Length: 243
Length: 74
Image 1 (cartoon, each protein chain N blue to C red):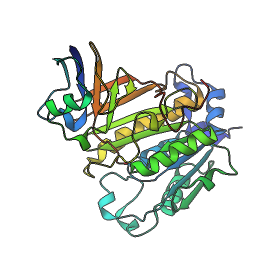
Image 2 (image 1 turned 90 degrees about the vertical axis):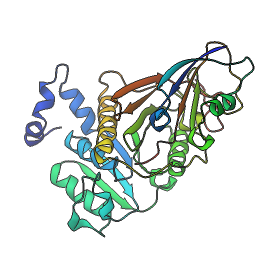
Image 3 (image 1 turned 45 degrees about the horizontal axis):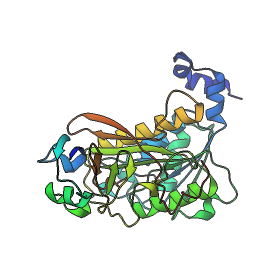
Protein backbone atom coordinates (compact mmCIF):
# COMPACT_ATOMS: atom_id res chain seq x y z
CA UNK A 1 0.00 0.00 0.00
CA UNK A 2 1.47 3.31 -1.09
CA UNK A 3 1.38 6.22 1.35
CA UNK A 4 0.22 9.73 0.41
CA UNK A 5 3.82 10.97 0.40
CA UNK A 6 4.92 8.14 -1.91
CA UNK A 7 2.08 8.98 -4.26
CA UNK A 8 3.31 12.58 -4.34
CA UNK A 9 6.90 11.48 -4.95
CA UNK A 10 5.75 9.29 -7.83
CA UNK A 11 3.16 11.70 -9.25
CA UNK A 12 4.85 11.91 -12.65
CA UNK A 13 4.63 8.15 -13.12
CA UNK A 14 0.87 8.34 -12.95
CA UNK A 15 0.88 10.89 -15.77
CA UNK A 16 2.36 8.25 -18.10
CA UNK A 17 -0.22 6.76 -20.45
CA UNK A 18 -1.00 3.22 -19.27
CA UNK A 19 0.62 3.59 -15.85
CA UNK A 20 -1.59 2.81 -12.88
CA UNK A 21 -1.53 1.87 -9.20
CA UNK A 22 -1.08 -1.84 -9.97
CA UNK A 23 2.19 -1.14 -11.80
CA UNK A 24 3.44 1.08 -9.00
CA UNK A 25 2.51 -1.50 -6.39
CA UNK A 26 4.31 -4.15 -8.43
CA UNK A 27 7.47 -2.02 -8.12
CA UNK A 28 6.87 -1.49 -4.41
CA UNK A 29 6.54 -5.26 -3.89
CA UNK A 30 9.62 -6.10 -5.98
CA UNK A 31 12.95 -7.28 -4.62
CA UNK A 32 16.08 -6.51 -6.58
CA UNK A 33 19.71 -7.46 -6.01
CA UNK A 34 22.21 -4.99 -7.47
CA UNK A 35 25.73 -6.36 -7.80
CA UNK A 36 28.11 -3.42 -7.58
CA UNK A 37 27.62 0.23 -6.62
CA UNK A 38 30.08 1.87 -9.00
CA UNK A 39 29.67 3.42 -12.44
CA UNK A 40 26.65 1.32 -13.44
CA UNK A 41 25.38 0.76 -9.91
CA UNK A 42 25.18 4.49 -9.14
CA UNK A 43 22.50 5.36 -11.71
CA UNK A 44 20.80 1.98 -11.32
CA UNK A 45 20.45 2.36 -7.55
CA UNK A 46 19.45 6.03 -7.74
CA UNK A 47 16.76 5.44 -10.34
CA UNK A 48 15.40 2.26 -8.74
CA UNK A 49 15.08 3.99 -5.39
CA UNK A 50 13.52 7.03 -7.07
CA UNK A 51 11.08 4.81 -8.99
CA UNK A 52 9.71 3.28 -5.80
CA UNK A 53 11.23 -0.20 -5.91
CA UNK A 54 10.36 -1.53 -2.45
CA UNK A 55 13.27 -3.83 -1.68
CA UNK A 56 16.81 -3.17 -2.84
CA UNK A 57 19.81 -5.14 -1.69
CA UNK A 58 23.25 -4.35 -3.02
CA UNK A 59 26.83 -5.35 -2.53
CA UNK A 60 30.14 -3.62 -3.21
CA UNK A 61 33.60 -4.47 -1.89
CA UNK A 62 35.34 -1.14 -2.50
CA UNK A 63 35.90 2.19 -0.80
CA UNK A 64 35.43 5.46 -2.67
CA UNK A 65 38.49 6.51 -4.66
CA UNK A 66 38.86 9.94 -6.26
CA UNK A 67 39.25 8.30 -9.67
CA UNK A 68 35.70 6.92 -9.29
CA UNK A 69 34.06 10.32 -9.24
CA UNK A 70 33.91 11.01 -12.99
CA UNK A 71 31.09 8.45 -13.17
CA UNK A 72 30.04 7.18 -9.73
CA UNK A 73 27.48 9.87 -9.00
CA UNK A 74 26.42 8.45 -5.65
CA UNK A 75 29.64 9.77 -4.10
CA UNK A 76 31.47 13.05 -3.50
CA UNK A 77 35.05 14.06 -2.73
CA UNK A 78 34.33 14.04 0.99
CA UNK A 79 33.42 10.30 0.74
CA UNK A 80 36.96 9.38 -0.35
CA UNK A 81 38.19 6.33 1.54
CA UNK A 82 34.77 5.40 2.90
CA UNK A 83 32.98 2.14 1.98
CA UNK A 84 30.68 2.59 -1.01
CA UNK A 85 28.11 0.21 0.44
CA UNK A 86 27.57 2.38 3.51
CA UNK A 87 27.63 5.77 1.78
CA UNK A 88 25.33 4.62 -1.02
CA UNK A 89 22.75 3.27 1.41
CA UNK A 90 22.64 6.60 3.25
CA UNK A 91 22.18 8.53 -0.02
CA UNK A 92 19.44 6.20 -1.27
CA UNK A 93 17.48 6.42 1.96
CA UNK A 94 17.62 10.21 1.68
CA UNK A 95 15.91 9.80 -1.68
CA UNK A 96 13.42 7.08 -0.70
CA UNK A 97 13.05 6.36 2.99
CA UNK A 98 10.03 4.14 2.23
CA UNK A 99 12.16 1.45 0.59
CA UNK A 100 13.88 -1.38 2.40
CA UNK A 101 17.50 -0.89 1.41
CA UNK A 102 20.17 -3.32 2.52
CA UNK A 103 23.85 -2.96 1.69
CA UNK A 104 26.81 -5.23 2.15
CA UNK A 105 30.48 -4.39 1.95
CA UNK A 106 32.16 -7.43 0.53
CA UNK A 107 32.45 -9.92 -2.29
CA UNK A 108 29.49 -11.39 -4.13
CA UNK A 109 28.88 -15.01 -3.31
CA UNK A 110 26.07 -17.53 -3.53
CA UNK A 111 25.25 -17.35 0.18
CA UNK A 112 23.85 -13.83 -0.33
CA UNK A 113 20.97 -15.47 -2.20
CA UNK A 114 20.26 -18.33 0.19
CA UNK A 115 17.37 -17.14 2.34
CA UNK A 116 15.94 -14.30 0.33
CA UNK A 117 13.77 -14.06 -2.75
CA UNK A 118 14.82 -11.73 -5.56
CA UNK A 119 12.84 -10.94 -8.69
CA UNK A 120 15.89 -9.69 -10.55
CA UNK A 121 19.68 -9.55 -10.31
CA UNK A 122 21.27 -6.50 -11.91
CA UNK A 123 24.84 -6.93 -13.08
CA UNK A 124 26.74 -3.70 -12.35
CA UNK A 125 30.12 -5.29 -11.72
CA UNK A 126 33.39 -4.34 -13.38
CA UNK A 127 34.85 -7.71 -14.36
CA UNK A 128 33.84 -10.79 -16.33
CA UNK A 129 34.80 -13.28 -13.60
CA UNK A 130 32.14 -11.93 -11.23
CA UNK A 131 29.67 -11.72 -14.10
CA UNK A 132 30.05 -15.44 -14.72
CA UNK A 133 29.49 -16.07 -11.01
CA UNK A 134 26.28 -14.01 -11.16
CA UNK A 135 25.25 -15.98 -14.25
CA UNK A 136 25.68 -19.30 -12.42
CA UNK A 137 23.65 -17.99 -9.48
CA UNK A 138 20.96 -16.75 -11.88
CA UNK A 139 20.66 -20.20 -13.48
CA UNK A 140 20.81 -22.13 -10.19
CA UNK A 141 18.28 -19.92 -8.39
CA UNK A 142 16.15 -19.25 -11.48
CA UNK A 143 16.44 -15.46 -11.16
CA UNK A 144 16.56 -13.24 -14.27
CA UNK A 145 19.86 -11.44 -14.78
CA UNK A 146 20.04 -7.97 -16.31
CA UNK A 147 23.54 -7.74 -17.76
CA UNK A 148 25.44 -4.63 -18.82
CA UNK A 149 29.04 -3.81 -19.57
CA UNK A 150 30.48 -0.40 -20.36
CA UNK A 151 33.78 1.04 -21.54
CA UNK A 152 34.95 4.28 -23.22
CA UNK A 153 31.88 5.41 -25.26
CA UNK A 154 30.25 1.96 -25.57
CA UNK A 155 27.91 -0.33 -23.68
CA UNK A 156 25.93 -3.53 -24.10
CA UNK A 157 22.77 -4.51 -22.24
CA UNK A 158 20.64 -7.66 -22.30
CA UNK A 159 18.07 -9.34 -20.07
CA UNK A 160 18.84 -13.03 -19.48
CA UNK A 161 15.97 -15.21 -18.28
CA UNK A 162 16.85 -18.79 -17.23
CA UNK A 163 15.13 -21.36 -19.43
CA UNK A 164 13.89 -18.73 -21.85
CA UNK A 165 16.88 -16.85 -23.28
CA UNK A 166 20.59 -17.53 -23.66
CA UNK A 167 22.58 -17.22 -20.44
CA UNK A 168 25.73 -15.11 -20.27
CA UNK A 169 27.95 -18.14 -20.83
CA UNK A 170 26.08 -18.90 -24.06
CA UNK A 171 27.91 -16.05 -25.77
CA UNK A 172 30.63 -14.74 -23.44
CA UNK A 173 33.46 -17.24 -22.99
CA UNK A 174 34.75 -17.76 -19.45
CA UNK A 175 38.25 -16.33 -19.06
CA UNK A 176 37.46 -13.18 -21.08
CA UNK A 177 39.44 -10.23 -19.77
CA UNK A 178 38.57 -6.53 -19.73
CA UNK A 179 40.35 -4.56 -22.42
CA UNK A 180 40.84 -1.35 -20.42
CA UNK A 181 39.43 0.94 -17.78
CA UNK A 182 38.98 4.13 -19.75
CA UNK A 183 35.46 5.56 -19.68
CA UNK A 184 33.57 8.80 -20.06
CA UNK A 185 31.37 9.05 -16.96
CA UNK A 186 28.23 9.94 -18.89
CA UNK A 187 28.51 6.62 -20.76
CA UNK A 188 28.16 4.72 -17.50
CA UNK A 189 25.17 6.99 -16.86
CA UNK A 190 23.58 5.97 -20.16
CA UNK A 191 24.24 2.25 -19.59
CA UNK A 192 23.01 2.32 -15.99
CA UNK A 193 19.95 4.35 -16.96
CA UNK A 194 19.08 1.77 -19.63
CA UNK A 195 19.46 -0.96 -17.02
CA UNK A 196 17.23 0.93 -14.57
CA UNK A 197 14.59 1.42 -17.27
CA UNK A 198 14.71 -2.24 -18.28
CA UNK A 199 14.37 -3.26 -14.63
CA UNK A 200 11.37 -0.96 -14.09
CA UNK A 201 9.69 -2.20 -17.29
CA UNK A 202 10.36 -5.85 -16.48
CA UNK A 203 9.12 -5.60 -12.90
CA UNK A 204 6.01 -3.61 -13.84
CA UNK A 205 5.34 -5.69 -16.98
CA UNK A 206 5.45 -2.62 -19.19
CA UNK A 207 6.45 -2.47 -22.85
CA UNK A 208 9.02 -4.67 -24.56
CA UNK A 209 12.13 -5.91 -22.79
CA UNK A 210 15.59 -6.85 -23.99
CA UNK A 211 14.64 -10.51 -23.71
CA UNK A 212 16.51 -12.57 -26.29
CA UNK A 213 18.06 -9.39 -27.64
CA UNK A 214 21.31 -7.60 -26.92
CA UNK A 215 21.42 -3.82 -27.18
CA UNK A 216 24.69 -2.28 -28.21
CA UNK A 217 25.18 1.47 -27.85
CA UNK A 218 28.04 3.36 -29.52
CA UNK A 219 27.90 6.98 -28.40
CA UNK A 220 31.16 7.84 -30.14
CA UNK A 221 29.34 7.41 -33.44
CA UNK A 222 25.79 7.76 -32.02
CA UNK A 223 24.28 4.39 -32.90
CA UNK A 224 21.91 2.02 -31.10
CA UNK A 225 21.76 -1.55 -32.43
CA UNK A 226 19.79 -4.53 -31.14
CA UNK A 227 20.47 -8.07 -32.23
CA UNK A 228 18.46 -11.22 -31.61
CA UNK A 229 20.54 -13.79 -29.74
CA UNK A 230 19.91 -17.50 -29.36
CA UNK A 231 20.77 -20.21 -26.87
CA UNK A 232 24.10 -21.92 -27.45
CA UNK A 233 23.20 -25.64 -27.54
CA UNK A 234 26.73 -26.45 -26.31
CA UNK A 235 26.55 -24.11 -23.29
CA UNK A 236 27.97 -25.83 -20.20
CA UNK A 237 25.94 -23.66 -17.84
CA UNK A 238 22.38 -23.63 -19.17
CA UNK A 239 21.96 -26.20 -21.96
CA UNK A 240 20.39 -28.65 -19.47
CA UNK A 241 17.42 -26.37 -18.88
CA UNK A 242 14.12 -27.32 -20.50
CA UNK A 243 12.84 -24.72 -22.94
CA UNK B 1 30.98 -16.90 -50.38
CA UNK B 2 29.27 -13.70 -49.31
CA UNK B 3 29.16 -12.67 -45.66
CA UNK B 4 27.65 -9.78 -43.79
CA UNK B 5 30.13 -8.64 -41.14
CA UNK B 6 29.27 -6.33 -38.24
CA UNK B 7 31.90 -4.82 -35.96
CA UNK B 8 31.24 -3.06 -32.67
CA UNK B 9 32.89 -0.53 -30.35
CA UNK B 10 36.65 -0.14 -30.71
CA UNK B 11 36.75 -2.76 -33.48
CA UNK B 12 35.16 -0.12 -35.75
CA UNK B 13 38.18 2.17 -35.42
CA UNK B 14 39.90 2.26 -38.82
CA UNK B 15 37.59 -0.48 -40.16
CA UNK B 16 33.80 -0.29 -40.59
CA UNK B 17 30.59 -0.93 -38.71
CA UNK B 18 28.89 -3.14 -41.29
CA UNK B 19 30.17 -4.57 -44.56
CA UNK B 20 29.30 -7.20 -47.15
CA UNK B 21 32.45 -9.28 -47.68
CA UNK B 22 33.46 -11.96 -50.17
CA UNK B 23 35.58 -14.77 -48.71
CA UNK B 24 36.76 -18.12 -50.09
CA UNK B 25 34.59 -21.15 -49.22
CA UNK B 26 35.58 -23.20 -46.14
CA UNK B 27 36.71 -20.11 -44.25
CA UNK B 28 36.59 -20.06 -40.46
CA UNK B 29 35.96 -17.15 -38.12
CA UNK B 30 39.70 -17.03 -37.41
CA UNK B 31 40.41 -16.45 -41.11
CA UNK B 32 37.99 -13.53 -41.10
CA UNK B 33 39.55 -12.06 -37.96
CA UNK B 34 43.04 -12.31 -39.43
CA UNK B 35 41.87 -10.71 -42.66
CA UNK B 36 40.47 -7.80 -40.66
CA UNK B 37 43.72 -7.57 -38.63
CA UNK B 38 41.80 -7.94 -35.36
CA UNK B 39 43.81 -9.20 -32.39
CA UNK B 40 42.23 -12.45 -31.13
CA UNK B 41 41.98 -11.13 -27.58
CA UNK B 42 39.91 -8.22 -28.89
CA UNK B 43 37.29 -10.53 -30.41
CA UNK B 44 35.59 -11.39 -27.11
CA UNK B 45 32.06 -12.10 -28.33
CA UNK B 46 31.30 -13.64 -31.70
CA UNK B 47 27.82 -14.29 -33.03
CA UNK B 48 27.03 -16.11 -36.25
CA UNK B 49 23.38 -15.46 -37.12
CA UNK B 50 22.72 -14.67 -33.44
CA UNK B 51 24.32 -17.87 -32.09
CA UNK B 52 27.68 -17.93 -30.33
CA UNK B 53 30.58 -18.78 -32.57
CA UNK B 54 34.26 -19.29 -31.90
CA UNK B 55 37.46 -18.96 -33.88
CA UNK B 56 37.05 -22.45 -35.32
CA UNK B 57 33.46 -21.99 -36.47
CA UNK B 58 33.08 -22.69 -40.17
CA UNK B 59 31.36 -19.92 -42.10
CA UNK B 60 28.88 -20.43 -44.89
CA UNK B 61 27.21 -18.40 -47.61
CA UNK B 62 25.10 -15.47 -46.35
CA UNK B 63 26.14 -15.81 -42.72
CA UNK B 64 25.93 -12.68 -40.59
CA UNK B 65 28.98 -12.44 -38.32
CA UNK B 66 29.02 -9.95 -35.43
CA UNK B 67 32.21 -9.36 -33.46
CA UNK B 68 32.39 -7.51 -30.14
CA UNK B 69 35.43 -6.53 -28.08
CA UNK B 70 35.29 -7.10 -24.31
CA UNK B 71 33.02 -4.32 -23.00
CA UNK B 72 33.26 -5.26 -19.37
CA UNK B 73 33.58 -2.22 -17.19
CA UNK B 74 31.04 -1.23 -14.62
